[in-house]
Image (tube, rainbow, N blue to C red; front, side, top):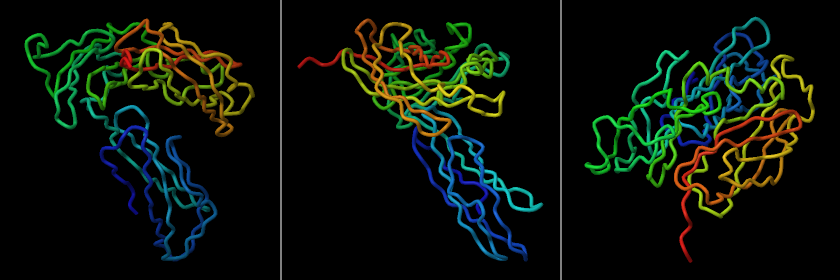
Length: 318
């Protein structure tokens, strides 16, 4: 009790802890076998082996770590019991919302059936803002002319999958704005090429990115910032067995555009399946304004790319 917690609007990267009550409504004691999250974004306290007497109650806590990208997030935890008792499913669900919200929070459709369409973006606080770029080009508005009309708090934008360069690697449609609290609004591209077929090299190198983009928001030319990303071990063909122990050893980091200078700092082992990498990013001055750069990561077992998003500006003069 309850079976589900509705978290409402939640911020990207935030954590949300909720406590459920497992009540034994039978006349016999029951023993918990395991509590297993269906998503790596969710953790639980250890209740394996706990016994619940007849009529008794066992508190159970689950923590949802929200992704950094917008959209609805539903996390489930399956609780199994010793014996032939059926499992229970409890849920945490929230809408990851930035200062600008998109409806829907994606573009495209399954298997390429929706190659073009529109999306509505609006500021949650109702304040007007301007759109700098949408999908790698000047925004295409519906019913709005920026040369003749003042900025609004809501826009309808056209999108077209055909406008996306290098679709298998650019799997996000990014809207850049001048809103101080949301300079970067990433929307996932739903397309046959951006799902399981994207980054097929992960099967051979035995790792994948925890998140396929890193939102740096605002960067300034010549000024380094420290960022991080997480690599996760990936070997479904051998049921997760670690067959390449050097999978998380970083050899190099590079910006494919050359607009960003990267510096490796350190790798921290979080678990047998996760490593966190710290690095620095410094805009070189060759690019100003919106940037969707591909960052190539090379480990001892192979290479992969993730997107780094930011609006780059010139630092104020002293």
